[in-house]
Length: 445
Figure (cartoon, one colour):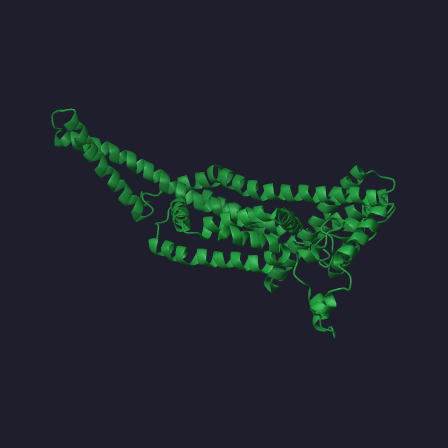
């Protein structure tokens, strides 16, 4: 009787879970619609129906930043929920749709879906939110159609591949580009000087510089915060999930199963046997040094047995810890991947941030860093470092160190990495900073 009641409870839980899954499209669309309504409410209440940030005359920069943060959160919710809406509809087959007509499960009306999607599009298309809603925007910051701060936006063409439209325009050009056409009659520095004077004599130059500094500071803060996020979150996920979630489950199965062995691989067993042998030899050696009477067979066996129990407990814990590391690492990688998926805008800013740091270094600093990394990862002594890293990873996951795989990895991966370094130097650094390449070659000779 108790078993039937328990089975009925399990069935009810599974049924509710399945019904919750069938309502996923409606639930996701409703949350996206609520977020769009909140954006519309902010526009009507604080910006007279205009886009957020367009009527900034009556507000300070702190208030505008406050509204832009809310706008960013709401746009992200819309993007995530629409992705969830489309994915859930894709995975719902005909049998699922028939189940959705059962009592207790509300069916989404196509007319309501179209109305909500149309309203969401009307709200979101008014904003350029990096790659979320306008992939052709030249701004890496949160801007609007009516924004007047066009002098401080970042050109994404420097950090993104050439678009098909731009590529077709180049291919379809009737006049081919050559060095004669690209070279002007006067030196380019003269035009740069004239442009700099025009900027400095502009009445709004000071305002533009201040606004540009604020936007640059905002992008730097976002990039640094995102960098800390992708470092701290996976580490915390690993450190917290291992003792709180994975640890109790693994300990339960390891303790309840009598067939579970002490060693995960043969290397652990060989290490344990080697330690037992060394312990026995150590006892005999100490006995000879102290000129004590020889130990009897029973005494020797008793001490070795105690040591064997000690090693058995130690290697059991090591095996259990290695299994926990595997699942904890999977959760950490999942958390890392989830952060990358939902933060596309921050990834672009982080790439821009690192690009500015690298290319703003002096030529000698660039050459020093390149030589340091190449000698460390693809240099003469790098195979020893790679061997230590691979053996440490194998021990971390409780896997036997496959020396054939390690030697094959060392023979191929540093070569591929060295080719990538040389291609980057030839393709990018030689174009951006040829003097740094010359310095690198002089230092490397």
